[in-house]
Length: 583
Image 1: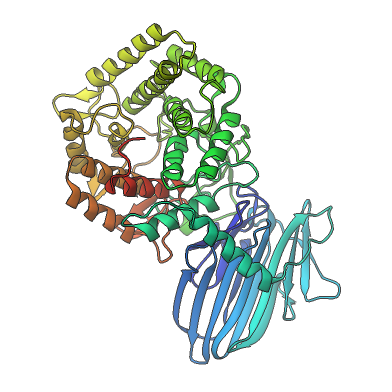
Image 2: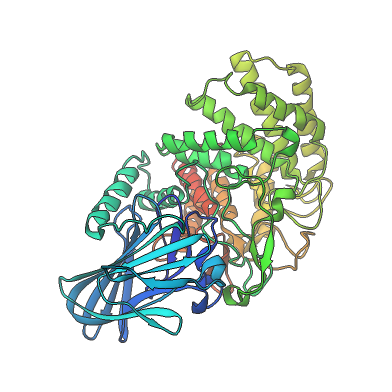
């Protein structure tokens, strides 16, 4: 699949010309194309040659989000150009003849509310096209060829000759408003290309993996909600981490957990504006009593995101249930405090905010952390088997204390520094004494535990211990031995960890990038580059990554495209190129 978007929402396009996922007007809105999680009857839009396609290739046009799919047939070839306009909520599809004369076919199935609600469809007056209304929603599809109704779908047959263009657009508006205006596709296309090219050209990264890093940055930008600055973790919900399994979650929301990684990736590649807006979003989202700090928030910082299961969708390759919303909002995660403080501290270092500007809020968060850091939590992986004493969570509590202390020291901010230093030292001792297993020579998933966890690869990256520390070195080696599957790193062993779910999942791609970073920091540069290059080879044909990789099925799994995977790719490239060593 490939991604197109307008920084309000996005759509996924398959290489056969099918658009099978589209949520309007926001990333987290109910889908009007939900065939990705069901069947064509749950909504899709296919535009492709009517006959046999002998060869298909596709690519983004340069460093943009304009997708071009080339279909070759016995009659000739056509290019399908897909993008979303710079102004929100309009999808444009252009069929362009490249050679010969090619018969083409369009099939449009509009279904609102994640594929269950059938709209009332009428023809537009004075132009080819349709208006589909269902409750509060309105979608208008315009066409340069005649559209016909057939069995609750909309179809069209047309031919395209060399040099000819046939244009289509799909626009959204609330149903109580007028029919949205029609964009001019021939004007919108160069505008979209110019916008994305100009944004990509702001990147300062000139390292060995320039094209891959730029594609990851464009993907992060595409997942950014322009009105608020929030960045969605992924474009989808319920794509399984294990095919046919139940590890299916909704990732169309914003995780403060990603904050420090996001700021690092954006600031170290020259995209300071997006970094500042993400920092602004973060402060608004977490504002309030520290006791109510959440694991995730909506695109605008919304806190009420209840999880439910919808049974009318069969699930991706029969992977059920399909979930909407995310119950992790109710979880307790200590590591969030660390990621937030790392982000706030970096903002000050970059000069984005004055040291005193939000100190009262930071101080309140730290005072709350001082009171609760010893408690068990659900951890970075949001396990559903109950709270545990996760070592990484404690290390991130240390990171939060360390950032706050350094800010107070460097900028003479009011704080009970002696008390905070004592707490920081106590947390450090707990992690080193109870989180490190001398028998296995590794930091373990939980205090006084034995199981390994790839999140501990982040310890040197957050500055908890230097990469050269023997305990870090032996932990990296142990993870390489015990959590590696076909050369990639698992989060943890699902047969040993009580995460409340049946065992089995793919290898978590971000963990493999973290492992490559650790190899580089340990001086094992050739191994690091080899692993990094292999991970790049797992990207799909247009450079996108999902959350995990199923080495048995040799395919990506999990929600797509995954911001965390692309953040880890960017961070690893920066480490391997020597641009940075820590968060």
